[in-house]
Image 1 (tube, rainbow, N blue to C red):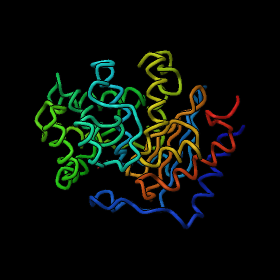
Image 2 (image 1 turned 180 degrees about the horizontal axis):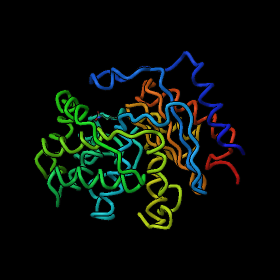
Image 3 (image 1 turned 120 degrees about the vertical axis):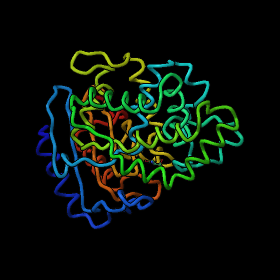
Length: 307
Ligand code: GLN
């Protein structure tokens, strides 16, 4: 299979599509991104990297950072984390608050906002916000093997100015005792994680540990069991109320962000990142999903296909 040719063909096809979804407009730095952008990067198990379109242009990874935050929190407190966050798909929007009432402040999973805010609070259990943000930046740089990755502070600031729903989530969980730190500090740290700026290439590189049973180039990042479990959560919860449809159409663990990126893992085969800023109704990249569907169809990489 000629992956270089395939990703170029996919990028060329996506450039012709008129239906592109809607660019997130809740903060100016995201609203200003051109809806015509499209990038794809595939890192294969043999280490080869295949890119097309705007694969080298950094964008706001937003909720894709929830995967890295979860990995760090599991590394810090291990399975104790699961006393504070669930592992079930929510079936509701990324920033939904409704389930928190009946579930007494325990979010359904770490990939909705409420869950990631708890995960951030866990990371702040033994660190100051500045240290936790530094730890995150070092971690993604190490995973991607790329020291040029940065956090876009203008994005973090804009999130802070408009993040009323996230603050409501934080305060509500605090009322149940499931946020232990100062809510403003937890949110400030969470927004900085969301404001990580990465290209498709950098993201696909950073996802290699999930493709390769927890290892990157022979270095162990997490155990094979933990990598498998993170992948399972990405499959069941990575796309909010669109997770079932993502599994149906693509059949791979994936995590989306409102910046239009998706990190997708074909275990044992590839780490994939796509980016197209136009979103569907659930806040996931419209063309990103279309592109992944094409990639999976051509490669047979769905985990539900006999290999
Ligand atoms: N920063 C966004 C928020 O917290 C992230 C949401 C997302 O990417 N789905 O609202």
